[in-house]
Image 1 (cartoon, one colour):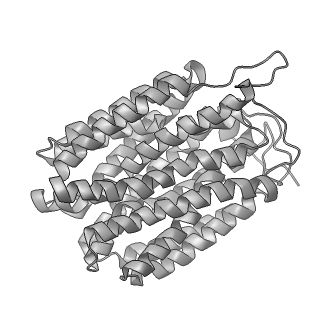
Image 2 (cartoon, helix red, strand yellow; image 1 turned 30 degrees about the vertical axis):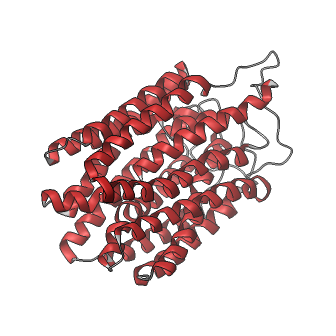
Image 3 (cartoon, one colour; image 1 turned 45 degrees about the vertical axis):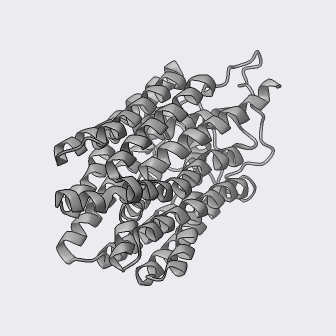
Length: 413
């Protein structure tokens, strides 16, 4: 195999690790009601586990990104995978909320920084011309994992109980993900011309919003307006994601849908996101990331308007697919925008820092939706807030322009 082709090996490894670990993360809603039944907890308390995981995620994320930039991704990703698997295995023995928060919340929060931002940064470094397409395939792993794992875990829970399901999930995460992390995940080496393995110069700027300019360091990036616009746009949108991904299964079962059918609707979001991630990356390479970003946000808002009234499985499944397409495309565009706005030299640290917004948003959304249900007895207010947040994201996207090194004000035409 020629060296430039090794980038696609990295894409395949990153895809698999992201599929398994993200699929397990988004399956938490399947465990939700069985634990409520056994322990008698309220939804706010049960959803708070994801809030704690996200809080720890945002604290350790910059350090993990910085360490991976300096030492390479293999060790970081392998350790994080082991922590995640161990948390699930220990989760099978939970007897109290404190233990659940410790095993699933704390260990999960320590693990997640190395299992999405880091492989995304590694793939970004391997590609120039086809970067959007490569990122789309890589991040399609989230969709494949979300499509496959919630229904499978729902079958395990219904057949054997939630404790054996946690144990099996933890063993599977460790055995299937640690080997590809160790064997295949590495940054490209720099050749004699100063170019990375597999690197080639794009003939078309995939984000036609002005010259992306030189690479920024993390301190330079955080002094730009573009960084903070992207940070808040990402965080606001992920707040909505936290609401939907953790509470869509409880919401649908509240309407009378079976747990297995509701888990399949969650899987439909994963199915749609596979399409969205691959298509959005390829389309952004040709037409620009800002147009794709706007389209994703608009579609997401329309789906959220229709979803509260969808109690029939076929309708809910179709809306789940559409939501997945928009959400999947959005998740590809954010790292693509990061690389084109700020360059590649500190991509790991910059994207990891921007991903702090992901941790804040997902944890806040999950907790807020649980609080809303405990207070009002329904998720109607959650959907209204979600639509308002998407409108705010659209407004922020309209101001996003390329920065220049050493200035807080925007550059570009």
